[in-house]
Length: 305
Image 1 (cartoon, rainbow, N blue to C red):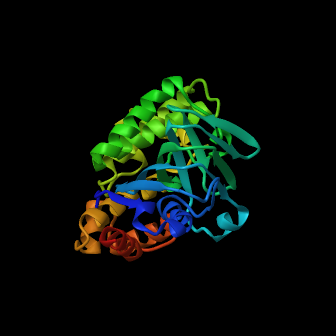
Image 2 (cartoon, rainbow, N blue to C red; image 1 turned 90 degrees about the horizontal axis):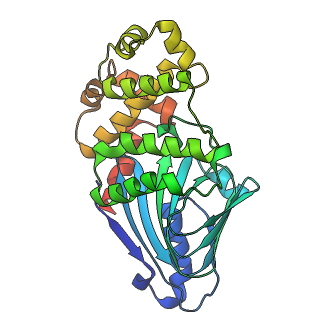
Image 3 (cartoon, rainbow, N blue to C red; image 1 turned 45 degrees about the horizontal axis):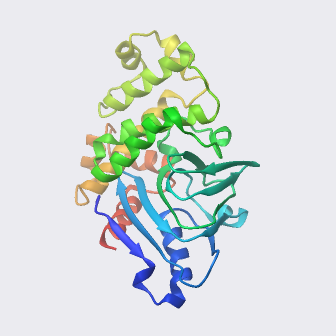
């Protein structure tokens, strides 16, 4: 499922290049309006791969303006965080009344659930990492968008650039943790409180042990060496333990469905910590709005294309 798909305007007649490019961008990222700064000689190429639900798209193209309007947002049923790593060239990003200059090495976040604009005056290259917000521990993105991160953020960008090449599913939890940290930097969080540190310990323990169907509050508290009271305090301003377990188990089920498309749903449920197929279906619909079958069909369709 991690095979790379390459799409290029060289595959179509030059007169159709700009229209084809818009379709490519909408397929690899989210639905947007794309307007080239110059129609003549327009060219672009995207190399895309999916790693356990996270999309990695490396693109290089000519100058263009990209608009995610309120209309596009309203028509979308999906919510993604786009982590944009500028590789070459320069661009401008604007969202929520804030702007960021995109220069090589900079990391900037975009929330697909709100309008945004990007403008590239000339040739540029980016790696865009598309992450379903349901996979992120930190769900509030408003304070983190349109902020250019450099310096320490290079640790995050280097990891994501390396992961793009490796395509290893087992690196996904580490990538999500690093992105969550970078979101904190972008939102101006300069330090973590003791409860925030405990919350991260809880998340990691749950992620490592979610396959155990007997995992409950007592087991999590004992595993993290904290009291039940501290456990619930740490999660009070975040998702509940029940929601955390459900989300992580559904993410694991999504990975199993992609990597083993013929595996019976009941077996997937057992492997991912659910009591049975019915509980998996309920959790899947609660988290994703769809069913395991819907997810399997989408994954299969993408793979065959």
